[in-house]
Length: 400
Image 1 (cartoon, rainbow, N blue to C red):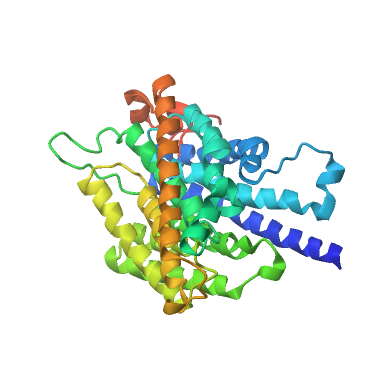
Image 2: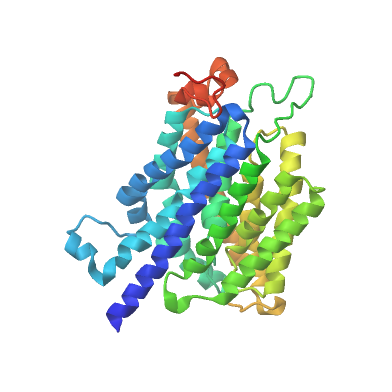
């Protein structure tokens, strides 16, 4: 029976890992559909290359830093418990690799390729695991202090803050350091619109992410005996709330409509195991409206050229999700309870602080040492031709 349990848990977590791995195709197509055509190949290559680099960084450094577990033993030891420790690493790796995938969307169209891969290794190997270890493994005594002080630890069931807010605030630092795309904002205050190159591809990316998110959230239980239909339905309701709020606030704009469900799903991750479905609907609705408002403000008023709006989508909606878990997770609002609003606020702010400081340090150092953006001619020609020597839609073909 014990072997059967381990086997079921391995299959459960493995299926979750595969679903979240598939979400990286969603990241790729969401970016591909949003950027201009001359940067579409780069969007696809970046996500795949970043995932490969993330795997090495997390396997050799990051996972050990977060959980104190390493894989420098014989395969016989690694195969024990049906290899559960290995598939758990695989599952959590897909979360860690979301960090550079999020950043990629913010700095798209003007970031140099190799420095971004170097940033990915440092972020996944060293920066992200610090807060991951604090929130999910009780490292450095932070959770014990929050429990002793406020009566409950920081709760983030599936990563509203650990993954999304951290990725979004790292991305904000990178966007500020790399600067706006050339021609995006003029000295006279004019704003040059860069509309999405392909709404169908953008929509495809959003749909892939949305479907995979149910593995992201539900499989965060990490054991089949702890699976919860509440998590699934709360994810569904938050997705719906985000969609409808973005549809309304965005005045039917398809870019906002397809990012709305993602905003709702980002926000519900933290408290999806605690909230009542109506609370989840409200959390998702707030997130959808927040994304539309802050994306518009960021791009048009503050002139921060965050191409996919990843700071608004992941950074702010993720932070809202961490705080919302302390509100709608409480029994007074129909939740299961066992959370503290102040602990959620403190944990969220800590995650934001580590992310922004870490991101600014990594990209700031790379900017000084090697540079992090394409030169004017390379950016004009597009990342596809400048970096990969091919375009997504070549106008001429050689041969017979």
